[in-house]
Image (cartoon, rainbow, N blue to C red; front, side):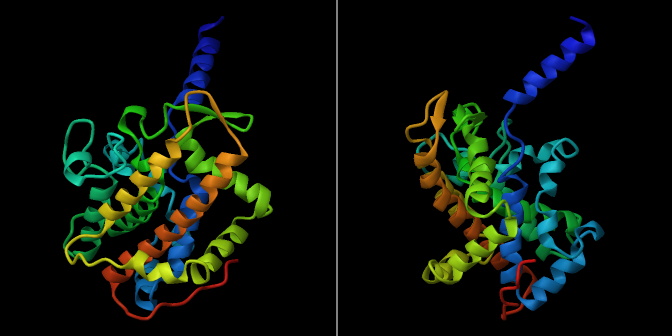
Length: 291
């Protein structure tokens, strides 16, 4: 086997077994931010649009996977996408919010707090456009249960499973596979239709819960630690009955889908609440039709 061919084979094999880089996948992050857009006050919506890069076309949702594309450029940002725990179904900031070097605050909760503070402070040295895009992405991340999964399996990345007939890993199931299967089976592979269904659930099925989702009494920080604690608890359920080389099919899918949809909804509502507190305004702009 020639050297170039051998190198190609090794790279393909590495790519097939490497931990998933994306969180929620592009579809999940887009949905979180599209829902957030519909909950922004007029003042916050205006401020957000002024900060967006030109390539976003005035849509926050278009930027919400940006942070995943920057991992190799900003290598320091990799630990900011998650907050894994020892597997006790709880999140403890002092114990769990650090990178592999033990540096404190280097986790998704610390990132949300820090980028929120940066956007509030006009004298912050951080680029406000990048701060906005990081914040929007990380609020999505903290609501994906396996981003607060178990440390020993890298949030499910090392647990190889079959999603129906397709080989993947448990983390990727929650990032991508559940959403893709739902879109194919129930929404005609149309992302906008799935977003509309989640928005309808917010105004109907979850109407009594929505105000509680966005409530945050902390004046100095966000409530991202609470969101991580919710995900850590949900992660424990996500691991139940799953072993190396498990085959996950309808039973798992129908148990996971309501969780995924609700976490996307909560992520969107809470992202909007954070941005509304940063940029001011009391009156929401109201739900907008999804194109």
